[in-house]
Image (cartoon, rainbow, N blue to C red; front, side, top):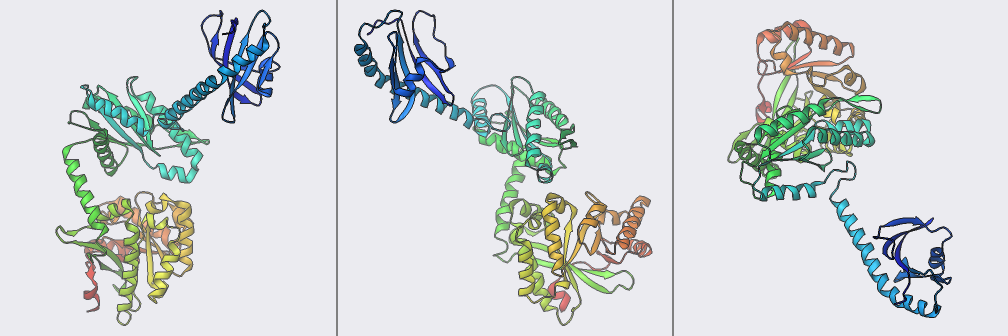
Amino acid sequence: MLGVDFAFVAELTDREPLRGRTVAFYGEGGPFEEDLFALGDRPCREVIERGYHCDGRYAGIALVDGEALVGWMAVMNERPFEDREVVRAVLEFMAARASAELRARILHEALSLAQAKAMRDELTTLPNRKQFEQQIELAVDSARPFAVLLLDLDRFNIINDSLGRRAGDTLLSATAHRVRAAIRPCDLVARLTSDEFGVLLDGANESEAAEIAARIGAAIAVPFSIQGQDIYTTASIGIACSRRQYHAATEVLRDAGTAMYRAKAAGKARSQLFNDAMRVEAFDRMQIEMDLRRAIERDQLHLVYQPIVTVRDRRLAGFEALLRWRHPTRGAIGPATFIPIAEETGSILEIGEWVLDRVCRDLNEWRHKLDDAIVNVNLSAMQLAQADLVERIDHTVRSNRIPARRVRLEVTETAIAAHPESAARALHAVRSLGIQLCIDDFGVGYSSLVSLLRYPFTSLKIDRTLIAGIATSLEHREMVTAVATLAHNLGLDIVAEGVETAEQFAMLEEIGIDYVQGYFVAEPRAVGELVG
């Protein structure tokens, strides 16, 4: 329209300092290339600040969308413009359309960027769950074999809670790097949740998937150097292969997840290939989970009490409250089956509160016959993490008018290790109420002197696995002796659980154990049998 030598459209990218980017160009300078530049004292700056500028050979007009300044359009000529008014009129005419198109381009780029971010994990820059599921859908639709690995870091919550979120983020980023290094170029790794990663193996069969899973597990088992110290973790990995007839990504992830949880249950730090038996077990577990949520209101839970006696004269000292479940169709379901489910689903909170209240009610029933008996009640890791745990316990004991000294809470070191700081505060507060505390299952797993010194325990219970071998293993006998000596030096009462034979009892008496419980002394009994 103007017969000029050059013309361009630029978008405004920054205001301090003023910078722009060329988005369209006309002239003899060759093909257009995007060019980011600072405005400085150029005529373009005048356009941005005044809305229009013309100096004879350069003319530019601001591009505005609504009230927003989005860029500018400019024309340049080697010869002076013959009629500046015509130049201005033409630029004003073209500016409206150019503004709309530039704004559309900016919005499109912003949308594309937002969509790209929506498909990426910000911390690790890996694809996120949404993109991972889309890629699995493509794999399901194709005829090529594939496998999906679902990887979960073992003990990540403990590391994150003890060292802080920054250390946890560093661990996750380093894990992502190691997983990428352990897989093939054709494979895809994604971060799915906090400490859960997924790997899509293209063209892999079962043996190849197992080999890559082992490689990933070995890479993660190497210590991570974080905040100047070596951090150890492992991975539990579930594997689902396309030899099964999958129809959707959710089915693949479901089976890989089932296999991954099986790997965790089997001891962690391993991989597990999904099979049909796992699906049956998973369905059965889900059914138990749903039934368990209704067990309290349907009066299916009940307590039995196992006596705890003194070793010296076999005098009754108290009981441990043990939870049982009478299922209407399955019959008796053992705590080893339903307690882990209750802890994983969170229903252990309601169950734990019910148990303590039931114990306090039973103590009231015994007040004339078993007035000095103390009842041990187990406390789970999830209960220990409750912010209002102390208030709940205090309310339950007070409302039932039970002397606090008649209740003893049992806590395992595993439960404490899940949230050590909050556990310390909670246990000291509970002890200040007058309630006694017992460290349970001592002698295996996390057992350490630190726990005995840091937390206000009044008694220690030696794990049944040590007691089981005391008559046949010198090592077990020496371990029990060492634990007894340590506990007595710290002023703690000692209870041995799982005592089954007269020989075990005699050895414990010789070592100097204070109290015992087990089938040699008495089996767990219902409330009516204790006070009848």
